[in-house]
Amino acid sequence: MKAIVVEAGEVEVSKGATPRSEVKRRVSIMDFILRIVAALCTLGGALSMGTTRETLPFATQFVKFRAEFNNIPTFVFFVISNSIACVYLVLSLALSFFHILRSTAVKSRILMVFFDTVMFGLLTSGASAAAAIVYVAHYGNSSANWFPFCQQYNNFCQRISGSLIGSFIAIVLFMILILLSAISISKH
Image (cartoon, rainbow, N blue to C red; front, side, top):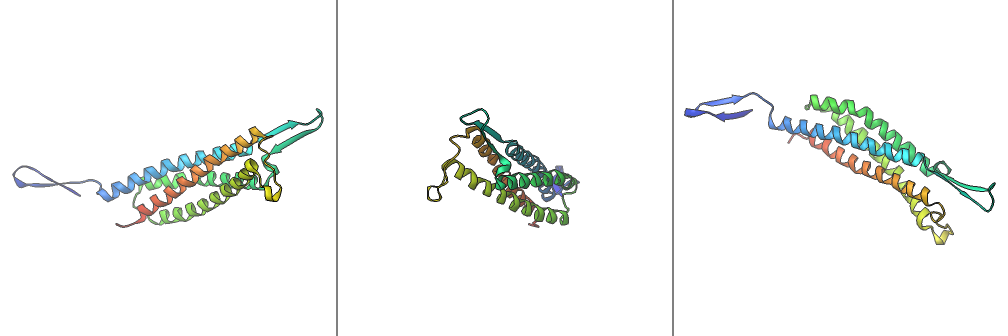
């Protein structure tokens, strides 16, 4: 409660939110906004990777080389992990909105921290595995005789590299979301 000093030494107590609950409410609003941005990033990464394909003609018109994301299982895992994280983020918006209305809820925040951590791990594993394949696609590995194929499939490699950006932004946002939830749960 805030105390306001009025003329002649009288003290008037205003009724309103305590500073601590106002901080929790603002943290809840930030949580809601970050979840929307993270959902858009994971959706963009999944769509960008999932629609990536390029076809190159060979010596004749009848023989063509095709590169698609589903030819590489790591990219399929990337699309699935981003899709699962996106669906979770959209579903968790309802609980995040509830936290704006009731900033003192603790048990539901603990549940969200748990699921945020699980989604953070899933998203990190999918993005890291895809990043390793993208690196090999760009630079190859001479000791294993893997040649870089991005010289031939330039558009394909640009799209798969770009899809990683959205996923890694979402990973950073998940770290921030976990920290914000920890701040909201803390008593001091």
